[in-house]
Length: 239
Image 1 (cartoon, rainbow, N blue to C red):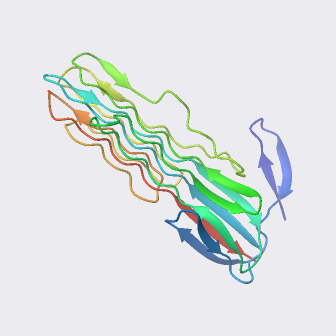
Image 2: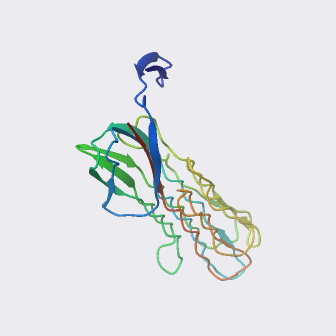
């Protein structure tokens, strides 16, 4: 079987469909570091779809009559690939963890989410973890905190799998600030942004969403960014 595939330049090519046959089962891998996935005895091909861990949201510092708002973390990247495999054979995988939110008492910027990987022979399919959000120090004048880079692309993937960036943290004055929302991934949204005092909202696990930024207003206590969501791997088995 053949399908039409479009390149970034708009060129159409005819390629093998890759999944002709019968679906045996669908496996959802939610945890594991250097863990082993074992195929069914009659499996000959698998399609692997996965997202990495989302980045943690940026923290918000405090000072008298001041405000701060961290940016949201980027969502985890997406990767997808069809592999020819052997039945009853183990393949190594890792589900990426979400990044921790930024903490003004330590590192105010959110942590990067971990990569999600799946290895078949010499090929490692990699979905890249989301970048952590940028924290903001307290102040009374207008300021923004934002991630100044594009989300990273996956490697060895059949599709280009980038995630959505987290929203910026915006301070208008010492009493008005809005924290950034966490970036979404292919499998779900990130933590919401907030406009009131509080820690950032975390993303749900196994979505790869980014954590929301933290918000401090009018000299309130320092706040911690939301945690990024962990990744997930979906393995479809065919014969």
